[in-house]
Length: 293
Image 1: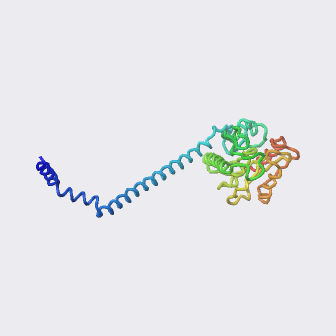
Image 2: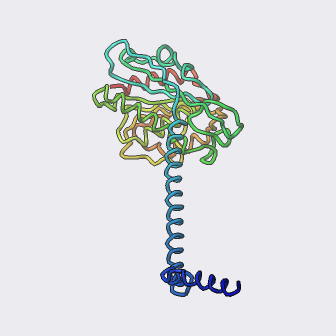
Image 3: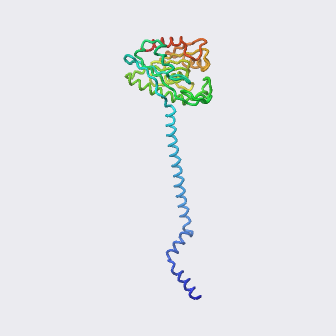
C-alpha cells in the first residue's frame, strides 16, 4: 500500500504541466514585482483621473445651476404697462421702492405728474421680486438685499443684487429702443428710493445716452463707474432734507460726484421725508417738458 501511495504522489507531481510551473514562477517571483507596480500605478492614475473628471463635472453642473438660480432670483412679475393713446414716441420705465408694488405708481404719470407728451408716452411700471431681506429677515419686494437699514453707506446693501436688477432694466430699454427705431434718447428711466438707485446706476453705466433719469430719494452707489461721456445726461435728482430712509448726507455724497455734469439738476425739499411730495411731482413735470424732445 505504501508503494502505491508513493507512485500516486509521483504521478501527480509528474502530471503538472511545465508551462504552468513557469507561469507561476513569473507571477510570484522577482521578475513580476515591477510589472505589478506598473499595473498598480496605472490603475491608481486612472482612478485619480476619474475622480478629477467627476469633480470638474460636478463643478460645471453646479456653476450652471448657480447661473440658473441667479436667473430665477431676478425673475419678476410682468410689469404694468400703460400704453400711449397716440403715436408711440417716448417711454418712461419706472421702478418702485422697498416693500412697494408697481401699481402704487399707476397714477403718477397718468394724473399726478403733468407733462406735455403724455399721450405719446408708454409707461412701464416694473415690479421687483420678493426676497428675504437680511437686515430684519422679512419677505418683501426689493431690487437688492439690505444688510442694514437705513441706506447710508456702501456696506449696507448687496451690490451684486443691484447689478442683476440693472440688467433687467437694460433688457427692457433695448426692447423699447427697437420699437422706437433705435432712439435711446427718447427713453427715460426713474424710480423712488431703491428704484431710484437702480435707475441712476443704469443710466450712468449704460452704453447709450438715454433721454433722462428721474431720481426721487435715491443715490448713486459708490461702486458705480460712470461709463462713457455722460456729461449731458439729463438727471432729475430730488431729495427731502428730512429723509430718514436714505439720509440727506448720503444724498450729498452723490451730488459731489456728479454736480459738475451739465445735465444734472438738483431739487431740495426742506423738511420733506422719503415720500414723493406734490412740489416734487410738479418739478418732475417741468423736467420732462424740458427734456422730452
